[in-house]
Length: 116
Length: 113
Image 1 (cartoon, chains in turn blue, purple):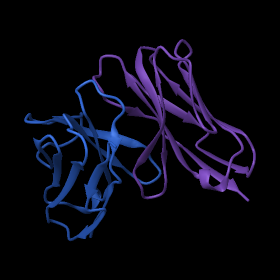
Image 2 (spheres, one colour; image 1 turned 90 degrees about the vertical axis):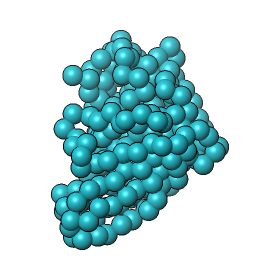
Image 3 (cartoon, one colour; image 1 turned 30 degrees about the vertical axis):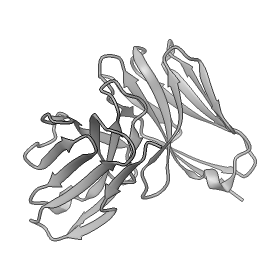
């Protein structure tokens, strides 16, 4: 149980395009979803927290107009990287939890984003 | 500032050895601590979760301990196997941060034949 599916697993696109990443909780209702970014050989850095039906809360230094997060249902959150540039290339991982004060978070398999 | 640190950054051991990974955190006011495994290019697999009121948790060959007062946790892996090769991440939920996880920098483990 507690499976989180993330799609796509790998995407390569040209600079200037927008890329949407989906995160779905398959067998539970995710009240809260988290989006992380991971650079090579570094740890995960939280980008934003989203609660279903509310605006996402972004961590300091994360551009909310650059990284659009939508959490419109209890099973789906999306992260859109707008006008992506090579410096946005990274590994993006989502996680989901069933309540606001929730543990453990259940993680997706990540999306490798490469911007040419 | 609430931070999580892991040492060593990388570790190579021969198969069959017992080993210990270390995690330290700067604030003892924690909700819980979690150990994860990450294979290259993959997401995270939760290994063990220790609540702030607990001292240790065990799962198979894995044992995690927690000492809140000293701000430390260890992950003990018994009889290591090549399949244990991965990056191990420690993550802390500090009190008052809702369910936000603060991750350590990870330890890359290689178990050789």
